[in-house]
Length: 632
Image 1 (cartoon, one colour):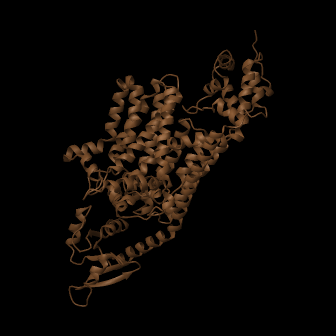
Image 2 (tube, rainbow, N blue to C red):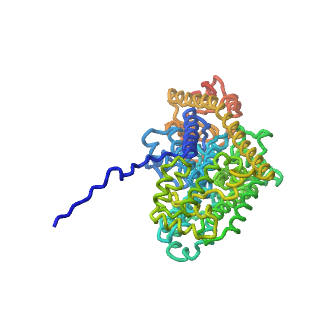
Image 3 (spheres, one colour):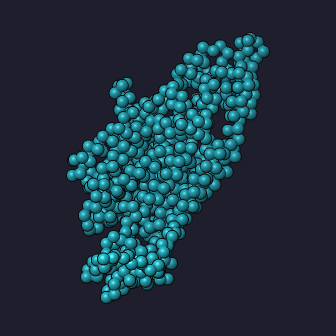
């Protein structure tokens, strides 16, 4: 007996068509690269300007790199974790201390934030064009925005990517099978714990997203998932907890004290700082260091949009049928949680003294509002979609008609799908997903044919998921309105109004971004003057100096601690030293110099001590700086 193997004809082997990125995804990628490239260009131009707080984080990174210490908190306080220092320490060890090596990790965190925001937008039901809009808004970089994202001053650069990651994990935990959830529970707990250590500004999002998980998965949390979550959360918060136990400190008290000290601010000033200045500054609509009147329009739109987005999410949550894991219910629930977190962030800032005392600088406390952008802009996109989607609606409708023809035909489904896949008719993407499914095509289509539900709605559920996400096709009414009959007058007016707001968001953000780019040469020139100061101190062999708060740690970090600086106030009395050891070193040096910016009150006071006799000071002038040396 012989056995043979029949060779399949070559024509039966179907060549694989290379997958191409859809146009909106490609555009989002290009916009994202532009946003990262813009910030990289700012870094090489020494913008945004550095300061002694960022240098304090740099000193922590320097100590970690050398093995001289492993600080838990930002030096001089018992809150704000030093995660940024640990991220930068390997780079400081390799390249030495500089502002650029401090900001390379923060730039990477921003790029991660863009990627996660695009993914979150898709998982929350947004189409690729809406995801492109979200990326475009987040790619803009006004003064306060790029400072929050790039300056390694503690807390802010890591909050937004971490908060977005929590929202993505929440979606996954609500829709995946129980067997695949334990690693996600661990990741959710670990990120939350790290955030509580780094900066509790993100706490409102942790609470709202956590409440959603408890409401939907409380049975699961009562078992192994709860144990895994709690263990991972404790692990993430371990530095904070161990330090609190060791030193008997309460980090909550320190955080509350940071909300503003001194005389309590008037409530009118707090509300003006939080509700009028805060949202435009935080969302990137203002020029460097100020908000012009015309840039404050977002203060009116923001609360209206916040309420409208919350109502839309709540209405979707109430009217949508299906179980707890229904995609639409999960998406609406997460959107509502994000909006609640944004409202909590704004409310916490409004009750703080900082909102009334220093509203321009303290608007950094609202940087977390960017996490909610995919949910915040959703009503605008929903209203504008009839106009935006009009050129594409006919193609979508044609795709559904082809699917309907397949469902009611007597011919084999695979044959028809193959014909459609190679056809010029615009249904390739959706039909290819059905054809590539593991389930028989007849079975999928047979489930659609006898049902009383509209075929269009069922095909949206048949479409394959993207890495656990859901690809929702527009509702039938939207398709008919766009592809068949004109939209109603009210809908058209709403669409025009929504497009106007979207154009205002992008236009105002672009104007503020251009303003930052214009200031970059001046910032670079100031950085050059500071480098000249460092070089001059080295040439004079100066090792210990006294200077103002915003001079000292910046100078010490720039020299790699070759020059130590003790802080003095404008009246020459001792100031606030974040590292007291520096003061001890400076006080022990009788030849310690003084450093002050030219034209500053400290320089004016020191000029009074310049003279030719012993005990007075000699002055050395450097561009923008004055160095005072004791005369012997």
